[in-house]
Length: 555
Image 1 (cartoon, rainbow, N blue to C red):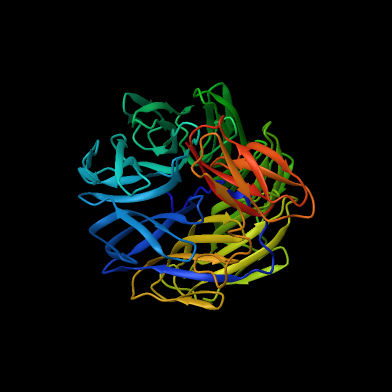
Image 2 (image 1 turned 30 degrees about the vertical axis):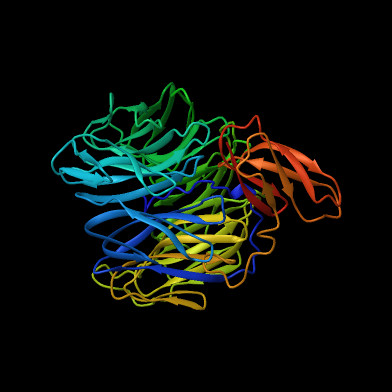
């Protein structure tokens, strides 16, 4: 599920400098729903200095001048500036109970969301989706224009519970790739059907911009249940998928067979054509290991995060010991060739789960998660749970939030904490320039983010919080408006204006996955440069020079 097995993918993070280790919580914004609950499930940068968020609510949700109302669980999508001003907010509306799991943007600035719905029908905009069963949970993928109009909604599912866990959009063609699992043995994606273990089987499915399911791929096994939790794209558009399978037996990714005697984490690669080309596992004899989030570097190397318990877990030649009485978190790296190159864990952790990851240009990874133990250590930093009294009936502590940074070399270099006396959790993390933004939920007790405290009227409430600036920054980001482009939108060339520098500098044009599609050198002391864009596909790009970026629209 989105809240508990979050993807977080690379979203423009390869453009961004590393956040200084001394940064602390600088902003915290509550997203309350009157007469109900709310959670902010995901966040992405819009490429123009603002952000798009999505979540689930019932009751009345007020975002600036926008008021959304629904008596059932409903999804919302909203845009806000870096100064915390809401500029757009819409909900799905209509009938049915809907929960959003994942969010992505296409190259034109449109929004794609994926989630689940229950009830006989569910309405998203003007489209009514029909459940394939009577009491089961089906999946949906929906598109929202940049202007805030629902333009598409498509369902998929089978006779029992089906879940979409993550989503990624290919900026080159707008195709949405979703991953998850289905229960009951069968699942239908338009004209395509999959069969799998009746107790749960993973899927990867692709939906084009016209709303047609073009691909649905699963695995084969002798009854071994499986689930796909996260997905990201490599530079060629192949899907890198992570998840887990459990029980004794063999699971088959095309011609690649993986065996297990317990619950096992996996990372697999699916080609654009829908063929499994790679599958590797983390082994744990007698234990449980699951991969929940995945991101891909520009060179094709993979970062994956998850949790393990009951026994040590091995990533090739790297073994992490089991050090607590419940779940431990892990972060591991895999080369593009499918070889494990690194594995790290938090020390003295118990009941700790990563919920989102975001990559930086230097290869470091930001991890957001939750912990229920009295303390958790990331390198030399110890975070302490503020609730020291176990709560009946399970006599456990409540969960608190952590955000930590793991260097490219595999060392924990930073950690911060947030939360209160109730179960507080993050759902996603986004590295955007000098900001690390975290979304999630808290309450009903107040939650502290460093010196900042959020309160609620007594219900579980969504939040957006930031390290190193974040939403509602205390001061403007240095150099945020130092680059200018004209004309913008551009068709053939655009003139970049920038501050003079003492030496030569590299200017790059990057697509919405952070991949460089054009590079050129600007001479020392130059204050302008002409960028040729005639060969680029129409869409939204970022022009980057040193730590500064500016959005470019190519028509």
